[in-house]
Each structure stands twice: as structure tokens, then as C-alpha cells.
Length: 388
Image (cartoon, rainbow, N blue to C red; front, side, top):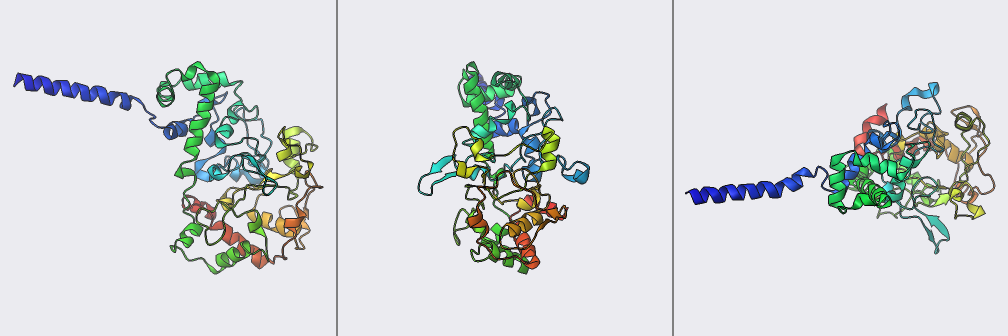
């Protein structure tokens, strides 16, 4: 009997010992570790800003902090506010939802076009390198260098255990390696289903679980019609009927003549002289034909992720549609939000008139229908925001 008790106790102690190591690792996968870092404000200088600050999961992974301030603070929202509460970023924060499907930045020799990457100008080749940018950005999280960020990570013993378990016991001996590991685990989290559920009304319609309204169906027909809107030229990755998992972007770069956001420029720079050269902002891209070209964004959750365009110049989705009609075959001389003529773009010489003008004039009825269809691209978790 005593021998059996001793064996049982020994087995129990072995069980505890074997289980204790895994239980002591709070973040036992790169995705879980990345999720915690995504929401961790301690990675910013003043410990006020996390990735989730400008990519709020409750609002389509965009910066929604000043969404409801309207005319009281029109610039905030168009540009994100840095960790110091004063500094402004240079562009509107793009959604992190579905960003995982943008391919690594590359030159497509078959089509003679640059494709993919992250940020509006593609300067980060992948999600990992995108995640490594904001902590060191002087207008975002404002940390002085990689070592300072790594030191903040090391303040959390659960992080230290996780990094050493998921990488190597010496991961923190190399600042560059540990900083890159931080970017990798955040990217792993951004590649989870939480960022790309594909459960919108449009997705449910494709599976036969939702019936489009008359307006939504008309809008879908217009959207995919090359004879009417030409939307799908840039905002379609796959071809019908193989549209399951469609992200509504071909991830190319185009200058569509978006008006400069003069108000935002003045507040940020004290003048309106700055020119956004888009993809040409990258040091190794010197193709003058692409001056001012911006990456085609996904249209997933577009109805709830305003303000719109890379500079946040438009508040309403309908304004974007009227702008496209103005640039195409329509007669819409004024911006409906300002009742003034549409403003001048950053770069006029390289506007992609070929695609913009390959359209037919849109009536108000058709614009209503297009807007109704675009609303069906809203993830189920955000559908309540359509009513706000």
C-alpha cells in the first residue's frame, strides 16, 4: 500500500512538473502574444498608444477616437493623433482588417505594375514590417529606438517567457532580432480570422443565406459592370462566380485625382504646400508616371471606416461616389460636403483618366444603389454601426 501511495505521489508530482511549464507560459502561440502586444499601450513613449488605438477592432480596425466630434474637430479622424496628443500623422490610418491579403510588395512584370505592400504607399513590404513601423514613428508611438521598445517588452515577464519559448532563450541578446520578432507576432495576430471573418451580407448572399434588397442587387450589378461604373477594374481581385473571399482590391497603385485635404495640411504643417507623392515617396521608386499613386484600398467595411481617401478629405461614402462620377462621365461640379468646386489633387499630371472616364453618368438613384451594395460589405459584427 505504501509503495502504491509513493508511486501515486511521484506520478502526481511529475504531472504537476510537466504541466507547470506550459501553464507558466501565458502566451503559448505567436498569435496570442501578438494580440497582447497589439493592445499594449506600453510600447509607446508616454504609454498612451497601442496598435489598437489607430486600428480599433470595435470600429473596423480604423481610428475612431474623434469620429463623433464632427465639425468641432474635423482634422482629427482624417489624420491620427500621436502619443503626445498633439502630433498628427501624414495620412489617414488605413484599416487593418483584411490587410493580410495584400501580397508582399513587388513589381508585376507581366502587367508592368507595382502591387501589394502595406501603408498607402506600400513602403512596408509585409504585415511584419508594417508592425515594426509605428513604434518608432515620431508622429505615432514615438519611441526613440528599437532598444527602447524591446526594453518595454522586457518589463513584462510574461512577454519574456513567451518570446524565449516561441523563439530562443537568447532572443533578447539581439535587439534587431527581438524587434523583428515583435513585428512577426503582431502580424501573426493580424492574420487571424478576427481581422477577416468574411461574414458580411454579401458573403451570406454568396452562400444563399441572405437575399439582397432591390437597391443592393442593383448596386451590385452596377459595381461589377464594366459598361457602367468600372469599379471592379481596381476593386476586384477575383472574378465572378469565384468571388468567395473577395477583398475588393487588386492592390495596384493609381492616382485618381483625390483633392488635397487643405484643412488637415494647414493644421499639421502650418501651410498647404506639402505634396503627397504616394508610392514615389519610397526611396527606390522613381517612376514619374506613378507620382501621386496610392494603393487601391479594400472596400471591406468601407461604409463604417470613414473618413475616406488616403488623406481623409471626404467624410461621407456618398461623397466618394459622387467624386468618382465627377471624375468620370457625370456632371457634378461641386463637393456636396462643402458646396464648393472639387479641390485640386496633389499631382495632376498622372491621373488615371483611362479608367476613370471609362464609365457612364450615374444618376442619384444609381449612387443610392451603389452605396446600398457597399454597405453589404460590412462584417456582421459592425452592422449595428450602419445605423449610427
